[in-house]
Amino acid sequence: MKRLAYLLVLIITFSCTNKKPTTYKSPKITQIANYLDSLDGFSGAVLIAKNDSILFKKAYGYAHLGHKVKNRTNTKFNQGSIGKSFTAVATLQLIQQKKLKLTDKIGNFLPNYPNKTVRDSVTIAHLLTHTSGLPHFFVRKSFIEGSKDLYRFSKDFSSLYENEPMESKPGEKFSYRNTNYVILGRIIKTISGIEYNNYLEKNIYSVASIKNTGNYDLDHPIDNAAEGYTTSEIYPNKLKINIHTYPVRGDAHGGGYTTINDLYKFSQALQDYKLLNKEYTNLFTTPLNKDSHYGYGMQFPYPEEGTIYGHTGGHYGVGNEWRVYKQEGYTVIILTNKDANKGFLDARYFIEKTIAGSTPKLDNYFFTKKVIRTYLNSGLEQTKAMIKDSKFKLSEIELNTEGYEMIKRGFYKKAIDLFTLEVLFFPESHDAYDSLGEAYMKDGQIRKAIKNYQKSLEINPENLNGKEKLRELFAMNN
Image 1: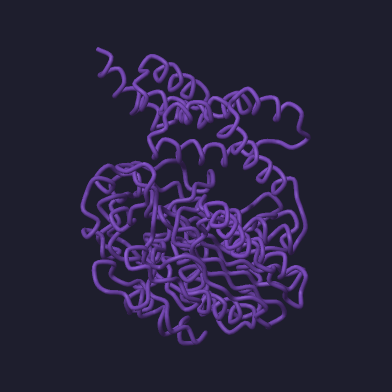
Image 2: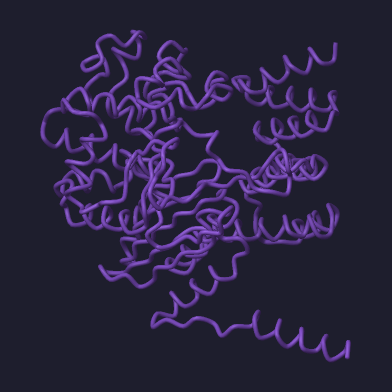
């Protein structure tokens, strides 16, 4: 009787886990669909179109884990920095209307800005391209430790950056900072005479027939919105809601909500020159040069070719992207409500590989994922041998991301090993030593933490995080 019951379980399990693969007219879509179905714990919605026809649209996982409410294709997701796309278009619209110039200084529109260097030197072009040198307000202690409902409107962020020292001279280097786009939002309001969100509604959303996108108040009910889930530091193998990591309301830097349908409409309106004329659409969707991955509010994964453009959005419990493949004619929208390393990156890179072909970057990403799995399952020595014998290279960012995932889950020894691999194969990276220092610090190995933070500062004396952590560590060690 037990054997019969066991066989019955096997038959049921086999029939449930070996479903016939989904088939579409396009072999590429079939391949993508079945890959997405195979991703463990993937949560979000995906839309793929080609030449103005939607070929694939599907939702996965849960919008609300507590009530087991499933994601749908019309579910609203936190868009993260995708909101910068709207801010960039709004800015370029004002430039197109000759109400603004790329060379205009901040002080022309914000004459009371307290920092004279910023007033007189930072231009609209600097803000759009993240080359202003302005400080990063999300890392301020007052923001991290303070209540997020203090930050509801653009003016509420001012205390986090206006009186802080600049990180670099305007135009000196690229540093991705939300501060740039918050200020652009203020300038849009000053020039247009209406609130930033009202400007978007009138000049972008209505033009593109967008109806389910906006910078909503997170502490008020949002119709048909997905919660965001990130790894819990309190219960290492569980997820927690990301509400306390985000400002209470989105703004010009991002953080609003949108749907895959709305982003597709936005992308189509942009390509059809409904939002900007041809000259400014081309300016928006063309790399600044062959080495620039970021233009006037647009990201380019391969700027030397310039055939793919779009914008990502990521935060705790947020992993998103809208992307146009000009050469192949595809538009891809991916919105998820978990951390980026919990399915979003896998989906993003697999779709890119299937549509546009493999690249060293993609090969290295999937190889690194395999290396991490090998390490977690078989240990460090076998992992080192695997790396030594491979023709592929490790992706530092993936190693680093997985190391911090281990820290969040309280697996400090595993984090130490992953960061040790990072240091071994990226010996000139100050980030690698900084991360290894943090893992040792979390594990209570103070001397080793100090040693690695010091090495990080040898490589990059401007590493502010390393300086701060060393002060803490020396205080603990005395």
